[in-house]
Length: 212
Image (cartoon, rainbow, N blue to C red; front, side, top):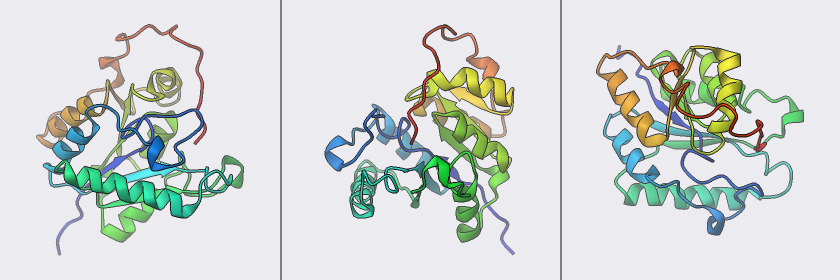
């Protein structure tokens, strides 16, 4: 029997595309983070399947239809393919935070669903996100969590450090996370948050949250 393989999970907003305070509601509002397409192409070269796991409470809040979200994701995947990358599937949670579902990050439901459907070993997997909720989902299934300081990451770093200590890594952006993942796949230890703990001023901004 072939053993289970790991995977790469990417949060969407703040990692692949720019965050918006008023949320991404159409393709016209979707803007790739600089370097994201090239980074996804580099991740594709690892041979690991890539999945997007994204909280999209805008669905149940009535701000975006399922059809509009599917169009955004379809066009996003097409652009990724055009740039030489490949994303196997997009998982999204439509629930608001008060609905107590099992799929909305920090819950690990989307990761568990992907693991069941694609026979994945989550302990050999990576999750790149820009919020403590992404780190929490990774920690829950013993995956390697990487917090990028793009998007909301700068304002979630302190919160994530306090919650998880050294149980996650930090990267400047997705391109930096790619380097870390490739080094880990070569058998080198995943860097801890200590690598970037002093890389920016802790008093940058009171912690804020774009609730997605």
